[in-house]
Length: 154
Image 1 (cartoon, rainbow, N blue to C red):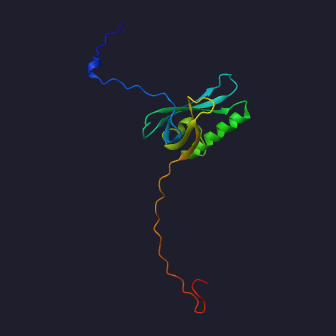
Image 2 (image 1 turned 135 degrees about the horizontal axis):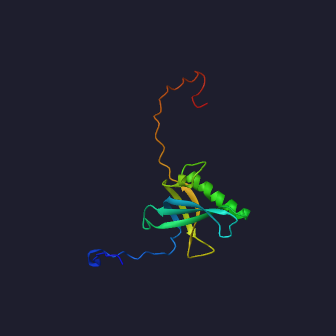
Image 3 (image 1 turned 45 degrees about the horizontal axis):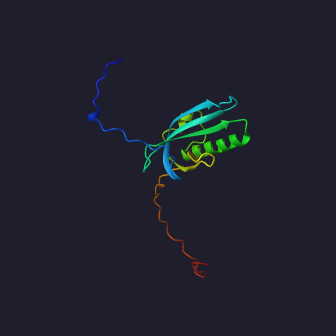
């Protein structure tokens, strides 16, 4: 047994967290952890992504997504690869060599309730967060003179 002194009267107790699914909507998130894991059956691989919500009422909540990028089911694999492509585009990457390249870049996730398991969420799409394009100063050019016999709008 280790000796340890602690007085719980001096610390605000942790509030209980909700494990209910997030309401359907768009959430600003970032990927904070990722890993490639073998499927339970051992016949494929999935990318496990841990994401954090960045703002709003649910700020700090986590969401995990599994993308079956290597799967005997071509449909499952195609869906996962399309989702991964959407995430890559949302974070501004066209090709990745390490899953960590997806980390720390904010994006918008379209979150819905999973139709197969209503106690869980599912991400239905990803969109990048783009800053407004910088304004480029336009150089004023003198208007070309219209021919004498022609109307300017003609």
